[in-house]
Length: 406
Image 1 (spheres, rainbow, N blue to C red):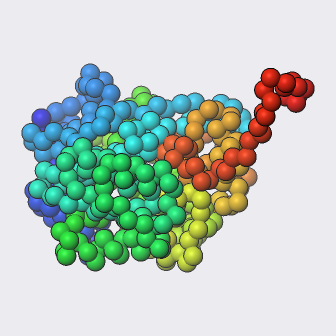
Image 2: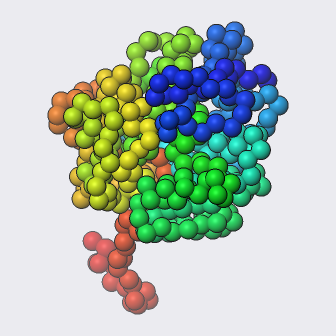
Image 3: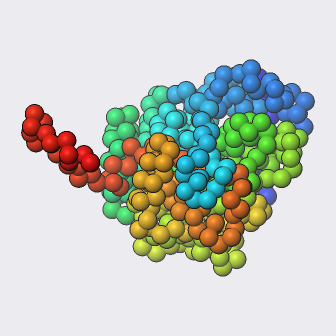
């Protein structure tokens, strides 16, 4: 199958770079992959996709796989799009859906991006990978690096969830806890790249994680019969998921595959303990100032400074969407409410989106009949520290008084 990549585009100033060699960033800012969409239109159509295996790789024409290159894969399935009627009713919404990314191989949406990044890194002859991570991305890099037979170095804040630490160690990655935030981890990777021969796979520090994340939008369009919802509510840390989906929707519209020209409003959700995108959106700014003393139980949202900040803000504004900061103190309760209502194990980042819906409804930004898709970006079970359990113990099971259950 041919590759349709034309070149790479610098998001900050439009500079074009060749795609046939290792590339990272331009002026410290991200690169985007550009495709020959007209050639893709002539080569494939939506009905062709349904004949292929139900994995993210079915969209190969819109992915940067070079000719003859096989993907580094752990079986990245099409994730389910599930109705959420009870949670929706509790919020006052009649058409709420949850796309459950926890079904991916490493338990989060990070599988998509790291599968793509590791595949291209191996193709270009890279041997040593490194990443700064809030948790899930580190676990995904460790797994895909192991699958590819590559060396991985993981740097994460010392209070990163224990499950994330464990999955990195199990996969054989050289894993380090850092006394600081993800930005401090990023500085270690950035400053050590040339000395250690590391290739930086951190958020938007290479072009291809974004392309993997793009498949969330491609899948969603196909699952909705090539229509799109009125709104997508998405937890935002580094922002690759939101940027990737917005890129996918624009490519689909250019291809003529969508049944309507209307694209969804993109709603970016953060905790009030770390909300640089929300603050910049409210101030009408294109670049976000770093957030001081970032703190949230939703580790994926604890990104005080995003390299793709202007891309996130551009996508929100172009879509007619908005950015919401939710009360940190209510995230765990929202998590319990959502899981109890639907049985879908929402992570704290996605539980924040439940609160964002509540706030946006109260502010009149949402109509109760809007079709809304909330993304569950990871499995609740990866956040053991978030919900401490103090369960009642039955000490004498043979002498139990069943009245205690009333």
